[in-house]
Length: 115
Length: 114
Image (cartoon, rainbow over all chains, first blue to last red; front, side, top):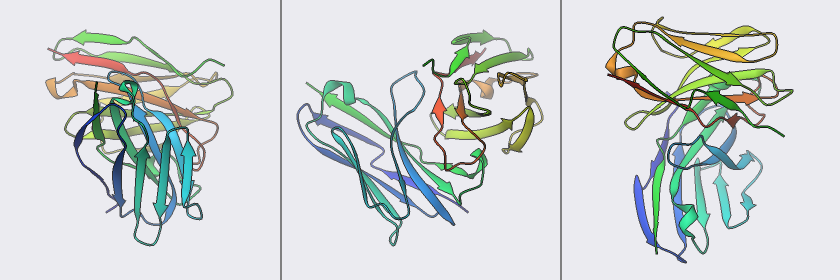
């Protein structure tokens, strides 16, 4: 069964600090992995998308890494800001050509940035 | 460029009633998928429509149904509402029905069943 596990479940850090969120998956065959940011009461917004051959993808202060051999990904947030407070969801897609039913969602990491 | 629009944003319904939610995709996007999000289960796939046809369906009871119109707008209907149907319902649009393309989510409809 395809699964995506995220850790930690929740995290509190001080503004200006860095943090790293983890995503382990057992989706097969693998097509791509996406990180989404979801503010409370809003829909998820895409941060990065990586295919099998990509190891790193950056989007401003967000840097995602992918190790397809160990089936692990991380999202690193640099110099956190209060606006980074949100849930971060890891989504893994099965082989290309499949539809939305091929997406496996993690339950997210709830990040709180304290001033 | 307008994003994915979901209406209404909030709904309160009574057990046993039915509800219809609407989703207007990004212009040019032909695929619309629906998801239920609850704190305990996270995002769960409901169904996906492409060119007015249901392409695939998640593991939800038949009370959950949907359709897509020729302009790609989609509606989702839930009949005989139960308390457990309270959730944030999200739709996402994509250029086509292949998951290697990006999915853009709407802001969701918050449904509360009392």
